[in-house]
Amino acid sequence: MSGVVRAPGDEFRVWPAERTWKLARIALQSWWAPLMRLQVYGRDRIPASGPVVLAANHIAGIDPIVLGFASPRSVRYMAKAELWTIPVVRRAMPHTGAFPVHRGRPDREAIVKGRDVLRSGNLLGVFIEGTRQSSGAIGEAHTGAAMLAVLGGAPIIPACIQGTDRQRRNPFAPATVAFGTPIDVTRAGRGAQAYRTIAAALEEELRGLQAFIQAAESAGRPREAVAPVSRAAVEAS
Image (cartoon, rainbow, N blue to C red):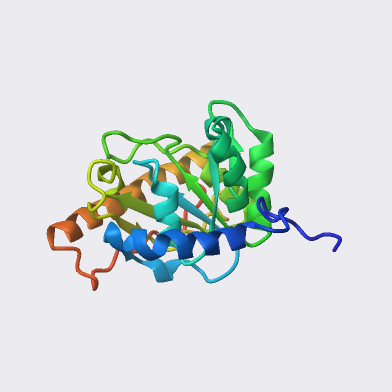
C-alpha cells in the first residue's frame, strides 16, 4: 500500500521482527528470565501502541535481550555497527528489527531507520551512553535518542538495567529493570542545544531509577515497590 512506512525488520516475509521476538520469548524468556530472577518495575508504563523511544543505560552485552524480556512490546534497537562484523550476528540481528549505527560521526541512514521505527508506531530502543559502562554508574548520555524522539514526535521512557553485568560470573545473579513514565519532548524545540538539554534530563532520570533499584535490592526487591515517576516533559529553556 502506498504511503505505508515499513520499520526495519518488516522486510522479511518468513521471519519478520514481530515473529522473531515471539519465538525468542518462547525459546529464551520462558527459562532465562526465571533463571536470572528478572524483576521488572513499571512494565505497565509502556503504552500498548504508538511510537515510543526507550532510553536505557548499558552495562552488559545481554542488555538488549533482558530489556526485551522486560518490555511488553518488541524492541527495535539502534545497535553499534561493529556487531555487524560478526557473521552470525549480522544474519540474525536484522530479523529482530535492529539496525546499525556508526558511532562517532553523523549516520544519516541510521537516523532515517530510527525515524521509520517511530513513524510505523513501533518501540525504538536506544542505549543512550553509546557504549557499555564498566563501572555500572550512569554515563554521559548522547543526544541520538533525544533527536529521534523530537523528530518522530514520540515520548521517551527511561529504563534502567541493573545486575546483568554479574551474569557472566553467575548466571543465577538477579537482574532488575525499572521503567520511568513517558516524557513529552515535543515542546523542547529542535537543534543541538535542545537535544543536549533532553539528554541531560535523561541522565538524571536514569540516576533516579538506579537509586530506586539499589534501594529495592537492599529491601529484597519487593514486588509492590513503585519506581519513581519521570518528569512530565522537557521544554525549551
